[in-house]
Picture 1: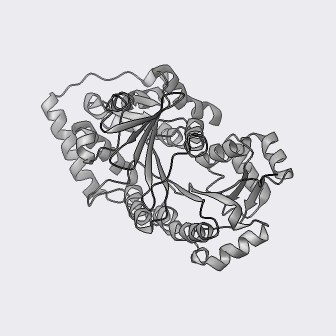
Picture 2: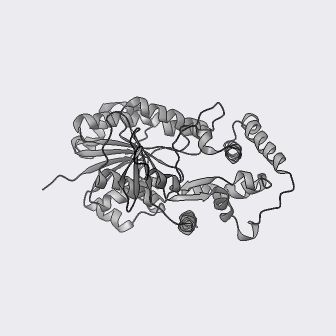
Picture 3: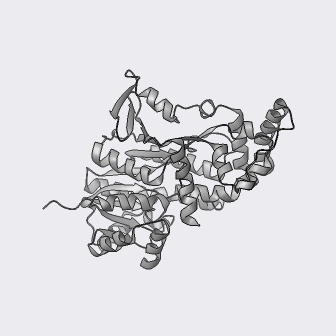
Length: 385
């Protein structure tokens, strides 16, 4: 009888973690989830809040397919010591040689600047220590990291989250440990919850700039589709890693105009767009000034700095602004599939998977129509109400 395959997931009780954990359990993997939570019932409750299947959870625990590594606070420097991980694996009766995947999904998007930095950066040293130990015991193991669309931003006026992800990205590359680095531009769930409370403020704060501010498109990905894609690429298609270079994987269901997302989060009687009462040139000047001055004047206010970023994106083509060929719309991915010189099509259905022949970059489109994309956004709001 073949040994049960094991995956270790840090951040497995979180929003994305719930989906990835559930996906691997349904495919008969043993899943180890590390969490800073100290109590088993509290850890289970957190998963249930994110929509985890209760019967699957209890069944998996009783069958020894789901194991919690409790009280693992990765910001604590002790987890950067190999001996501590050795003791943990012994305590949960898990052999490091049986671990085929280590997946890192840890990373706060809000909180104080120090909390965000610790969650996204300090935790990496702990993760790297585990990965080195596991890879030494099992040469077939892979390290999978969850990145962010903001991690390649440059400049002096980055928000705390943007800065943290930039530093984290540099550490991941320097470590030479990461095999696959997934980037989802917009994930349903937590993002909507924050945006729901921010939408009225955003709508009113720059209400005469809708044409400019809300005209750019945002890539949308359903969290369960994201988990499906991670599993499909690694375990079904079995995309090969590229030695010491992480393969970047950008995933999307398609795009929605950002302003449409914000508008749909407002009560129906507050969605009307006020008539512009200022000339377009003045509107553009206002947005430019807003994007430049606000980050300086209110440097510690994350929300106003995010508004400034939106204003800037409304004025400048985002692809040119980023200076990298990272983000591709659904149509861009379809066009790339026709470019046989630069791209190779790894799969056409159920996902369109396109690999860049010259760089370790893969684009995945699991397409949804516009109405389905709206439902992706609304789904999280309905489940939380």
